[in-house]
Length: 289
Length: 122
Image 1 (spheres, chains in turn purple, yellow):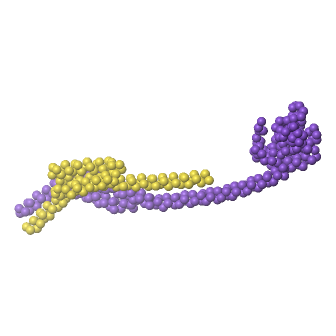
Image 2 (tube, chains in turn purple, yellow):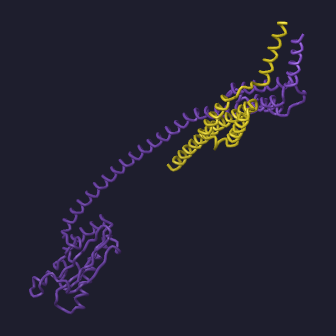
Image 3 (cartoon, chains in turn blue, orange):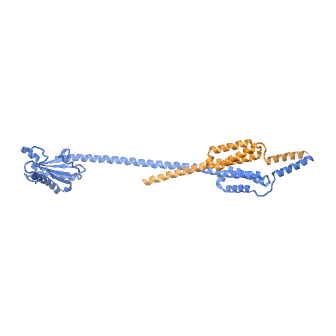
């Protein structure tokens, strides 16, 4: 009998300690609705099934405590745990999705890098081929230039031109002109022919025709005569098709003698026309006075 | 008589398990502290500042309850603090991974753009 009374007291204690009104619990409701949203999220179901299950167990614990009218504090404690575990499930899914994306992106990145390297290799090959072609082109150009130089030497030899510090200089002697006249003798024609051939063959070259006399006679007369003789050569070349703008003439008279005017032999040497051939750029150095 | 005694014992046990143990939750406090430490080590301060702060606050409260021998409250607070810290950990890991995904994608995008530009130049 005494024990029975004790039993009844104990039951009352249990009921009063853990019991409560079966009213709705907002915290539990929130936890439940958040869990239901997570449950519908397929990525959470796929990527965080264990965490979702743990959240569900916590929610069930809270719900059954609430149904058993257990202490509100205890119901809400488990509701809070359920809510946080739902959030953990969500983050776990995010983490797993991200890691899967990393695993997928890595091969893609590798492929892109391979593409870049291949493109680089192709470009390098193209550059190498271009460089090789350029080298071959340069070599054949150099070869052509050398051939032209050889030809030029050949032509210069034919012209009987002299290499001086001003460049190639061709001298037409007095014997090629009529005495005291500007006109060219027929004997000069071979030289003029060679010169006009040379001019046609090397269109980048220009010439300066300089006339000179001996010291006999007035300066004015000598300069005029020397200029006219230079001009005769110019005309002869123009007649053979050489553009006039490639030819400059000047009459120096008795200046720049190359031999003594005291002897007839010297004077004959001084009566002359010199043709100075320009470099490839058309430049002729000035005569140094 | 005997049956009644057994029923009493069962009832008392049921009471004890239903309303929580009154043993000091020393183990729970230690474990929660460890989870918080781990979360902080991986950078929860940057990725989940609110959660980690909440975990620390609840653990402090749990310790105060423990000190005044309110073990039931201490245990519940420690449990709450622990899920907060676990959430902070997961949020941090997930945040870092998502950042890595973003950087990786951005890297790929830039690489592709570079290829496109090089092709356009050629």
